[in-house]
Image 1 (cartoon, rainbow, N blue to C red):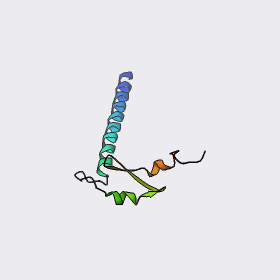
Image 2 (spheres, rainbow, N blue to C red):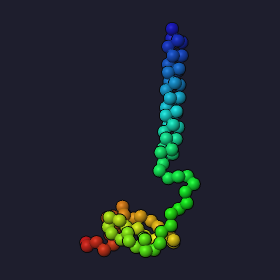
Image 3 (spheres, one colour):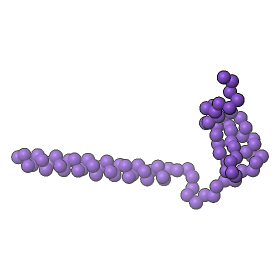
Length: 84
């Protein structure tokens, strides 16, 4: 009787691990498929004048070594120019 209960317990625990493993691997695939970016897309290029238009606190872009960065979320954290 104890052996049957032990085997049943082992079966249930192993089934639980298999189910969780499938959920984790499936979750990663769903995220990749729901990405809005095409896999073979080329990086978008911006002119200096286009980047210069994004010069406000709620829309701020910068160029560093020929790459464009959206730093809008960082502007409020930056101490430069803020009164003490």
